[in-house]
Image (tube, rainbow, N blue to C red; front, side, top):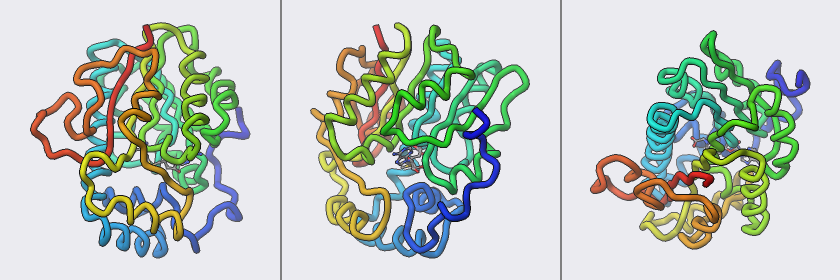
Length: 267
Ligand SMILES: C[S@@+](CC[C@H](N)C(=O)[O-])C[C@H]1O[C@@H](n2cnc3c(N)ncnc32)[C@H](O)[C@@H]1O
């Protein structure tokens, strides 16, 4: 797997003239791993869709609650985190290993800047393991093959796809990616999802996504509750089901954000 290991990202893969999602997301989360073009596009989107920063923070908080629940209450100790994003506070392995020090985590992203910063994701506990795979979510078989040396796919895995299926524009293809991943893991595995929508308010979200698609990369799409639910077909939804990610297993009166969140268990 050495070809996947984060040494330095090939400089010719890093574009500083076009805003990239991982870097703009980092900007909205208050991070510093972004370029002027990312901040300019990030500010423009915020101007059209003022709650985007709240969405990003709610998504990360959901990630923390989901991983703590799975590692702590359910006993999951293997995580495949696809569309990782730039390292931030409380990355998946830190949260999981806080509860289960032996947890094993494989991160996957295709952004060269995430690859360049991935060393911060490899600070595993001694008892556990972390790995980073530079790969595209459109190729789930490759991801599974590259994850196998680190994860035992014969034991339950939490497949995490937070804010990533929205970059697979074709809904049938997105469903097929999820199906391939979930078919490769056994009963007791979980799927952790967040996805932007136009259904939970989010004033300005539609115009902001249009602007994004004209000015940044990769292109994004929102999905309906029905489409989001179809990604979880065949899985048993954990309480409270499909909700604004800001309301999942926390105060149900928390302000909604235009981002669905849900966790499903493979029966
Ligand atoms: C909105 S961020 C979400 C980051 C993190 N999952 C979170 O919830 O905070 C989406 C991430 O998906 C990555 N991404 C987008 N398209 C991808 C693809 N086709 N394959 C792999 N990663 C992708 C981006 O580089 C970015 O880091």
